[in-house]
Image 1: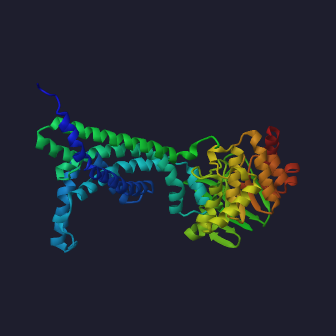
Image 2 (image 1 turned 120 degrees about the horizontal axis):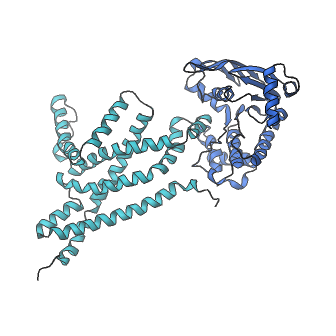
Image 3 (image 1 turned 30 degrees about the vertical axis):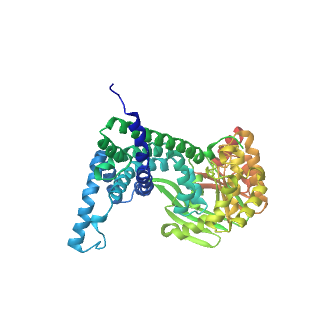
Length: 240
Length: 246
């Protein structure tokens, strides 16, 4: 009798796939953190219309949006070692860096941070600009410094506005990390591919890995709903 | 004491303030009246540099600032020696009532948290909001929000309080509680600058009234002088019309 699926193989592949979850989550969360810095920095450049940097930011965002993530990953993976090597030979810089010992995970983290940073930039900019002008004025009027104003008043309010968008982008990033196997990072997708070719049971492992992604994304969505509620707690109109 | 000398403000080629001179003694309450677009709010906002004046001199409590050469520290000095109450309240939405009042003390004056909290609670008691400490602005009525706004402005113990149409966005039945709060603050001897459309209130509370139109001061004097015997025809016209509408 012909079986559609080798259920045993499917179930047995879970532990090996799940064991790679830290790689997937690590790249996604790590690049979220780095890209938040990039996003806030570039958003402020745009808002304050910093000369030169503002143009560079526009080109960066446009380039990232206009090229496939896959290409960006290759660019980082092949480009950065070449650039480091070039700087070492031509200028004697970065002598302590050993290009061959940089783990592929590092390139993956970089590529995803650069990618997500560009998308967050626009979201963060519009979230900051959505904060009422009066909030800025009140902060200035009591003598707050720009950094104090941003950290204590503006960012918390902008975050509440931005969380749904940030969340969607983060979930996309989690799914996009499935590309990293192409540069040799064994994430959950990479592990699935390895298992699949070993057992010649690709359908089974891809079902397994899709279930893992699905559960992960549901969990993140739940977490985001909680975060958003927390960030917007001050908007409730009813006294507690 | 506060002194404004020959304050000019241009928006591009639009001349909004055309050489304003005002001198206010300590403890004096001065109201600025005038039709919309006369520049009275702009004048108030030039004092703490929410608008950058084009030229002139602002002097508060002995600190003299030529606006054309004003640096960051000058602007900081002017902002910490003034407290502003906004038409739209502008309470920090993400902070509770207590935090709104405390933040200036902890972030700007760098007071210890305990001390800042104690001070803030005293001030909130004065404006009658001790029972709302942990509420967010969205949970308060407009009148309550504006009273928090007044408490926030008072917290830094400024030389002068600037009121920018403090009751203009309020429902009519909430105006009185805010006016009562302002009156109570005036009674403590605070120097105050009030831009308002509440003529009766201005008449009652002010030591002096300034009438502005088209970026210039048309007339100034005691409330009695201006309301009963204005020298300028334009002042008379405005006050009689506006009083009728009140």
